[in-house]
Amino acid sequence: MDIHFNGKTALVSGAGRGIGNAIAKRLALCGAQVTALDINRDNLERLSEEVPSVKTICVDLSNWSETKEALKHVGQIDLLVNNAGIAILEPLADISDGNIDRLFSINFKAVVNLTQIVAQSLQDRNASGSIVNISSQTSMRGLREHAIYSSTKAAVDAFTRVAALELGGQNVRINCVNPTVVMTELGREVWSDQRAAEEMKTKIPLKRFAEVDEVVDAVLFLLSDKANMITGTCLSVDALIIVLSFGGHSKQRQLPAPTNTSPIAGPLDC
Image (tube, rainbow, N blue to C red; front, top):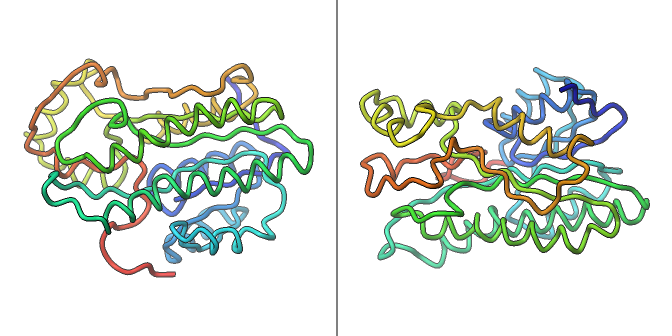
């Protein structure tokens, strides 16, 4: 299936590395004019070197007003991918209000903020558009130590369905992609223990983890006019792991968020 975005402009958050980086590159390859957002300036500079046509904006998406200011002159946007996110995994007894605020600010509030910005731009131009939010299969099932992370992703799923109702009248579609463990650079590092990785794969019907391109394929399909009748959908890219339970797996605490964009520890460096 050929998918092209010639003449379209796209905004991708969390594009410095991982899934977001791959989405930004593929969109550019398919003809879109891409603007990449990330908090890590070095990662954005590497992206610019690899794909000079991609414009970059370094911004802390957890800051509502800073984000609006940074995008004030970004121009028209036809396509939005809300990919930025972090994971802080901890048992219920250790959850702090600070971590709740941080997770919701980046994983959920930033999705709402960028969606508002792009939807308003589309409405002002009386233009159609497409939005894809990168959620997670953890939004649909219980995993130990994922209480707040999973809650942020469940919020994204719910927001997507409601936004689809409200934006449908202006011909703006919005959908979710909900991946399982994805073999990003971080994913490969976390699952480098061969024994643990093989044990985890036995829980997955297809007996393997997702590759980055498999998630990108789903995102580009939903963004494209091939999916013109699809909105408000949460598309699982998880090899059916959603129907299984692997209980207290020893690697569970280190499960990487499929929407990783920057280290979850350390200062905001932009």
